[in-house]
Amino acid sequence: MNIGFIGLGNMGAPMALNLLKAGHQLQVFDLVASAVAELVQAGATAAASPQEVAAARPEVLITMLPASAHVRKVYLGDDGVLAAVDPGVLLIDSSTIDPQTSRDVAAAAQKQGNAMLDAPVSGGTGGAKAGTLTFMVGGEQASFDKARPILEQMGKNIVYCGGAGNGQVAKVANNMLLGISMIGAAEAMSLGVSLGMDPKVLAGIINTSSGRCWSTEVYNPWPQVVETAPASKGYAGGFGTDLMLKDLGLATEAARAAKVPVVMGATAQQLYQTFSVQGNGHLDFSAIIQSMGKVEK
Ligand code: NAD
Image (cartoon, rainbow, N blue to C red):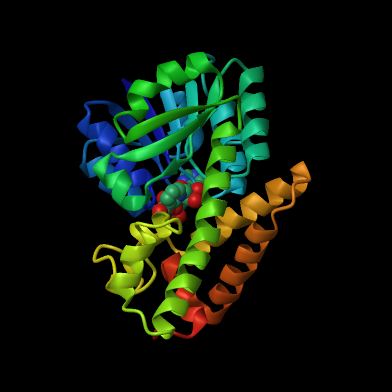
């Protein structure tokens, strides 16, 4: 299949590489020349703009961009995708952005005969490399059915969430809960260890009891409890505090628009914000435990 791919960053590059490995032909574009060069070396063809990717007549065009403003620009801008794409080409945006932008861009695409799916992912850069991402997909069911085999070459769980924007809704709701649960896990671990518990024993109790969650079991914020967690590697790699902050911003903004109180989500946002402005935005978000004074920096 001919596939266009725009946005070759930490996530987009390994996703695009997996599509190349699966035997597809890729036209790629990124603002960063070295990112394009890496994909060209692996067999892709370089394009000079989003418009040029669209004009190369792909059957499917995928984007993986930082935030809502980039998605609007790449699709709706003067040299953007919609200015050049043939009707019928399936558009898939895997960026994490606000649901309303996804709905607006999908509506603009629909007007000119292009179905569009929002398909944000979870699983991080490790999942992107391994091809084990979870895709949360919003849009028409028929477009989802068409996209599924391609998404399966980059991911393991491909979930249909309903109409346009619903993939983003699922993503922001999940990540808001993750942001909150990590702070809860950090408080529980700090409290228990400060009162004399061995961190591994405490985590073992929690993980076989009702406090168990992903943040305690797989990604425990206390160092050396889970060997593979960023907490055991100086909070390097993983999911950056600033990326969590971005997702909490999307969640609280969506909640404002929907008039839903998200008191815990907003509090979590402020706690990560404080941690970030203290110079920790690059650390994995589980490093928030350092702000509780019991884990050394
Ligand atoms: P990134 O910043 O590494 O990559 C984004 C890429 O988009 C960059 O290479 C940038 O040059 C390119 N870009 C920006 N504007 C462009 C334009 N106008 N035209 C072409 N290219 C442009 O970000 P990432 O970590 O790959 O994340 C991408 C998306 O996936 C984000 O929305 C992020 O929230 C989401 N996400 C990231 C992770 C993660 O662990 N990194 C996990 C899940 C979801």
